[in-house]
Amino acid sequence: MAKTLPQLRTEIDALDQQLLALLSQRANLALEVGEIKRHEGSPVFRPERETQVIQGLQTANPGPLKGPHLALIWREIMSACRALESVQRVAYLGPAGTFSEQAALQFFGSSIEHAPCASIDEVFRLTAAGGAAFGVVPVENSSEGVISRSLDLLLGSPLHIVGETSFLVRHNLLRLQASLADIEVVYAHPQALAQCQNWLNTHLPKAERRAAASNAEGARLAATQASWAAIASERAGSEFGLQVASPAIQDDAFNRTRFAVVCLPSTLSAPAPSGRDCVSLIVSVPNQPGAVHDLLVPLKQHGVSMTRFESRPARSGQWEYYFYIDIAGHPSQPHVAAALAELQGLCAFYKLLGAYPAGE
Image (cartoon, rainbow, N blue to C red; front, side, top):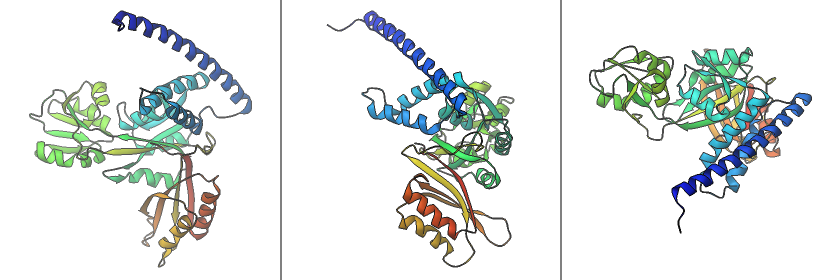
């Protein structure tokens, strides 16, 4: 005989009490770990350890919860337990409601101290100055390519990359009323305007497009005038009292943005290998025939996979370039270490940006 709804709810209530007791046990163990870490001088946050925990649970998952949902649940559990040791202050491009804030919450969980910044430059400055333990910055979009400002700042910054996260970006047209009528201005970050240009050309061809420092800042501005709209997340809409005039207006349905998590090496050294890692570096080579080809030979010879290769002008006036390279693996692996050593010998400039657990 099938159970009744009251019976099922009683069972769920009992399980919730068991879960609460187990979570309290876990939190007490986390406090003990924190005491050991303080005694040893170890960092509170270890991204490779949290990655291994989540991957292990996803592998052992008996169902029916899906792997990504398990990851979200355990990220929050670990975030709350981590906050018992020390609350991490995280800088990101603000104000509240930006995709950068969403990336910070996705990576660290909700138990953080928020440090919204007015620009990507300010995220780097605040984190490098010690005003925030970590910074979260966008580095690449699947539709529009690299975020040039982030790459340029990584070149001269003392910060290094200790993690990454990415997600599908869903752009919504927001305004004070849920209508497309009488919209005169659309605010958004330039990247968002570019990612939605075909939709805007079709549905709002006469509306003026104005760049904002962030999509959330555009949403804040749109909340001040009935004829203004913004391209932003639903979270930003809720933050500023806006309605969704049109959902999912991005031209690419699979529009994805990747974010890097940065910090000072004194805050957190390079994470230990997690089993699924990425190495990021910036290099330049002498301006001579075949130099770029030679740069890639060590990777091929040692069986190292390159996952990203971008160029940026060196601004020397000599048509020279910096190359931003991501490879799969960790420097602790002999074949990766050998490839990096040979590659460095070919470079006029070489900077290791970080070795860290690869994002999904």
